[in-house]
Amino acid sequence: MRRRLTGGAGVITLTAALAVALVPPAAAAGPTRSAPRPPGGHQITVRNGETQPVFSRADAVTQTVNIETTADSDRDGVRDRVQLRIMRPRETDTAGLRVPTILEPSPYWAGIKDVPNHPVDIGDAGARALTGTRRDLAEIFPGYYDNYFLPRGYAVADLDSIGTGGSTGCPTSGDRSEQAGAKAAVDWLNGRARGWTPDGAPVKATWSTGNVGMIGQSYDGTLPNMAAATGVEGLKAIVPIAGISSWYDYYRAGGGVVAPGGYQGEDLDVLAKAVLTREHPEVCAKVIDGIEAAQDRETGDYSEVWAERDYVGQARKVRAAVMVVHGLNDWNVKIKNSVQWWNALKEAGVPRKLWLHQGNHSTPFRWRAEEWLRQTLHWFDRYLYGIRNGIEREPRVDVQHADGTWETAKDWPVPGTRTVPVSLNAGASGQPGILGLRPRPGGEQSFTDAGKTRTAEQLLADEDQADPNRLAYLTGPLAGPVRVDGIPSVSLRASLDGRSPYLTALLVDYGTDTRPTGARITTGEEFCYGQSVPGDSGCTIRQALHTETAPYKIITRGWLDARNRHDIARTEPIEAGRAYTFRWDLEPTDYTVKAATGSA
Image (cartoon, rainbow, N blue to C red):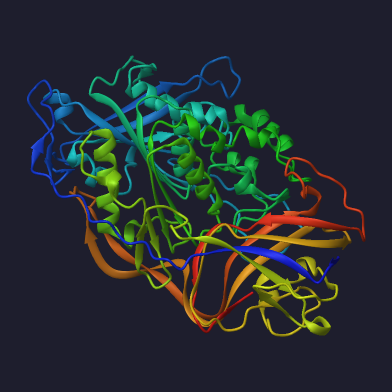
């Protein structure tokens, strides 16, 4: 396929930030104090603005509850039920202690099934299908929440999303039924929903204060977003890590079908089949067939199926304080999901924090453990216990730089960021052009799309030479560092002639350097974070970010289906040879290009 740029120059808009935000002084530590004494005389202990580990993890009690939702996703005429497994201090049974709950909702607690992806017409050597695993629900309280939060006076809980594990209903990959499932757990903890023990006896959360927090990564971070977007009363704080805010922006981009990184051919239906671990899964066949029929892998247009899986417009309903966390090298759940959620929460006036780290699809717990635990504990203490520890007055934003250092800021993009337009100036005789601050006259440029025969990485090689399959524009060595902070966008005028309607733009840092890849490595250093019990030491091994020395790094990229040049919800034909104006955003980023290196 041939693409032609007309007029000699397109325009790419970047955001550049050179200002460094200063860190305000931390709030002064408060004296030791106790929470109001509940009936029975037991209480939490607070010192220096945070709850202390005064309860025993070893003596904790467990409870399993099946909770009625308002959804009937399997269409059997009976409301779905979600299963909640709870661990809480023994004193909630013996001393009348009432506690808030920190909950991780997930479709993965029972594992996933082997499911093939849809066939695709592009090559991806790293493409993976979802691979099956099975887990014993009776043994699940993984991670650090029970060792760390429970001794401080919290119940911790795992929730099976609808259609998974011990729940009924059908998994629906993010629609309103799954929202209802996550919401139901909060309702039961507040006495508004019915619940039953596994043997069918009605049960209430008499030990619960009604204050609930949610935390989790990936799908487990998406479900807290979904629950918060309902405006459910009692959900006071969430920590979504690499969570989805719009499923369109997970499986689509710019009107086209764009898979999550490494999972070519996955889609809503594939994921629903993979997490369908409930008993009698055959009852969900028609439901998932309906998802497959509606998701539309042909046009990639935004439609009703995506609108009901889009929570950004529901941010105004959110009552919970939201601590958004995302990796700047995450190409699975792309960072747009967190940035658009962050911006919508800001417009809605929701209390919020933001962590942007150099990992990929991961949580920074294991490489910034002490600060991670401090901030998440203070976040939950502040909003679930009402402890005035000053967390809301600390800098809202923590950003990790490529060298591993962290910066705090009042907001993001960091204050002082401004939009800088730069031009794509044509090179002579098909040679690479110039990415410059001023437009220069030039002739038409063209290239032929090589399709699936060449990867983006292959097209980035030999950037200073002409290549028939791409156009490159270089800055040359920089006199000083340039920080790209926010959402870059590209605008150009071009004509197309061929089958593929897709346009891709990449912003690249050229120059051999050692940079983080997003992966992690194990350091061998043990770190203990909480109380131990037999089979669970309360410790983990620290990680560090993996780096590699390479001639370039892709800073960010973005895609557009040219047929969706006006609206991602509407496909419009392209007339071969006719020039059109195209504009699209690249994925948000926070990246500093060093002096003496270049970009393209």
